[in-house]
Image (tube, rainbow, N blue to C red):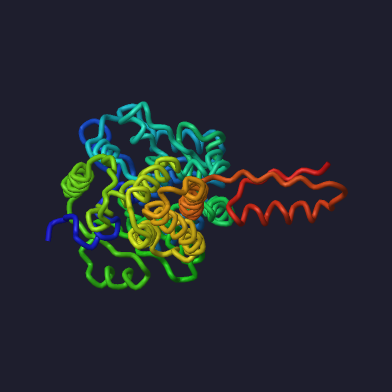
Length: 451
C-alpha cells in the first residue's frame, strides 16, 4: 500500500500535526537538496567517505583498516567515526565535514519547505547540515551545545533544534559535533540532554523521518528514551524505507511503529496530507459563551489549550463561560468536562482546585436566589449584603479559576519558574551543590546564592 496518513497516526496527534514533534535524520537530505537532484550523504555514505579518506591519506596500517572493515560490516559506525576523529587533525576533520555536509551548491528543497509550512509543534534534527535554514532566513535554530542552556526554548511553539550541533554555527567542530563514539557517550550522560528528551516526549507525540534501523542517531534515541521511561516507552512513529514485515514486528515490540515507504517521492504526498490536515483545522476561533452546556464546542477549547501560549487568554474565555451559566450544576459540569479534555492524564493535580470552586459557586447561586425573593424588596440593607457577598465570592471564583489554569500550565511546561534561593549564613560547597541539583531535577532554573 502506498504511503499515506493513517487513522492511527491522526489519532496519535489528535488530528492536528501542530501537536506533533518531528524528528529529522540524515536520510531526508539524501535527495534533491543540491544541484542536479543530488543529496548529502547518509550515515553509511559518510562513514564510507571517512574510510576512503583514511586510505587516501595513508593514516592507517593494514591491521587498522581490517578492523575498520569488520566494524563496517557490523554497522558499527560510531567506532569507525571515533577512529577517523583520532587519526585526523582538528582542522582536517572540520574541513572534511564541511566538504561533505556544507557544499556550495545547495538548492531549495521541496520536502524541507513543505515540512516547515506544516507548523509542527517543533522540529528536532540530529543533522549538522543547513538545508532547513536554506529554505527560510527567518528560521532561528536552537543549536547544541549552547542551546541546551535554556530548556525553555523548546517550549516555544514551532521551535527548530539541532541537538547534535551545526556545521556552520557550532564552535570548535572537532570537539563539539556529536559524531564519534566518545561524543555520543558524553551527550547521553548529559543531564540537560535527558531533561530535553523528557520535555519533548512527555506531552507530545513523536514522528521521525530520515532515519534507518542502523542509524546511530535513531538507535541512541530509542535507548535513551527507554532509560528515561523504564521500558514504558511512548509509541514513536517512524517513516522508513523498509518493506520487511519481520523487522516491523520486532520494532513494534520496542515501542517503534514503522511506517514503511519504497520511494523518497512518497514523502511529498504524505507531508502534503499533513499540511491539508493543518489547514482544515484553521486558526483558533473566538470562543463565544453560551447559556447551555450542551452547546459548548469542546473541540475549540481543546485547540485553544493546545496552541495558546497565553494564560490570560485561557482564563478569559473560561471565566466568560462560567459567568454565562445560571446554575451551580451547569458551572460544575463545564469545569469538570473542561478538565477531562485538556488534561486527561494528570487530572489529579487539578482536582483539589476544582473542589474548592464548589463553595463560591454555591454561595453565589444561593445569594442570587435570595435577592430575587419578593419579600426582600423592602429590605435594601439585606439585599445590599447579599450583593456584597456575590461580589466577594465572584472575585474568589476568578482567582480559583486562574489557579486551575496556572496549575495545568505548570504541569504542561508552559509556565516557566525562575527560583532564586538565598541562604543567610554559612553553607558548605557540598550542600550548595546538592541544592542546585535538586532544583534542576525539578526542572527549575536556579540561582543559589550565599550572603
